[in-house]
Length: 340
Image (cartoon, rainbow, N blue to C red; front, side, top):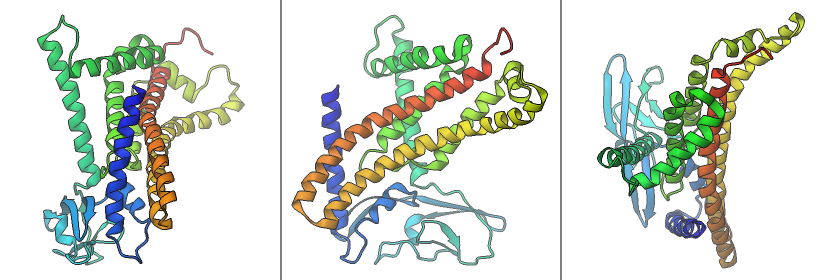
């Protein structure tokens, strides 16, 4: 298994280096040689894969705008790209995309809602599609062969499902684990697949987008607190055994604690994934900053090593997010035989 990780990481590193090398070599001498780092990790209205000479390999994405007077309007992101510079900034139908990749109205007083399918949204659909393919494929196998050993997709999915159920849900939630296991499985597979696909060259930084991690954390927050029992809420608003004067301090702390949990989930996943991408791309950027064969060899070896670590981090972060979600849910639904 470790050898497979090494091989896969090496292939990812070589392809990533090749894509980056071609793209950066095509840039001008005065252009910032490390600007591609932020371009890779931030969201965009187009999906850029590589630059080959003067040819930019990009996938235009739908720009969808809603305003009170015009209703829904649909454009292609290519309509906002300058054909000479290949950068956004062209005005189209009263809108333009600025240098920060934000859709703006030419008339600053005009109000609108941007509901475009950006690169991260497209990546979101891709991750959901892969997850559904795995889950539905495994389900189809068990329906056709209920008494046979799993094969194909089912043999890949089953050990993970059993692990999440027996090692995460059951120990941390207790007798009510069956109710929440589907949610924990969805959480684990979504984050894990999103992390792995995000390591591919040209992929979107989905799980390194704080909007995504906030949403996942808030779902856990609502699942936890909507299922909290009397004992759980009693410990929050009137902690048993605590003198009344101290409740004035303890209760605000407990209420703040309700919100620090999803905050911790949000930051942990966001920082771990984004930092890994920045470190890998930084080592690639060093090759073109120093323009040295020695630095190139050293950077390549470091990128291969860090890619191996990132493959492990992708799995660990999915596990940690799911584990802490299970712990929070377990604390909310646990039945206490006595106040403590």
